[in-house]
Length: 88
Image: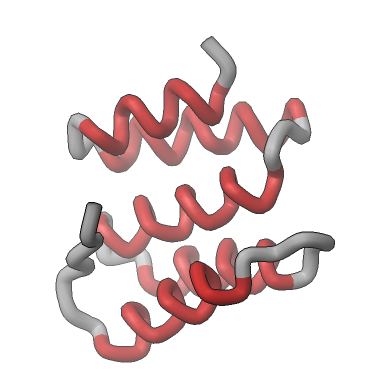
């Protein structure tokens, strides 16, 4: 499996630190970069690593085809400084 898929699977299992590591490997391979950065930002939020979450969201915002709604969501969650609740 590629890093993105592995990271998403680990996120589903709420293994946030392992998911971040998988997403980092995916970024190194430069696959689906925007999605990886956003998902990594969400993992950092879950781990309460607010600064890292904002950094990842800002990196995603700088890329072509950025999902600005997702970026804004991460930044707003970080600003509110409370546990993240993601609707399926």
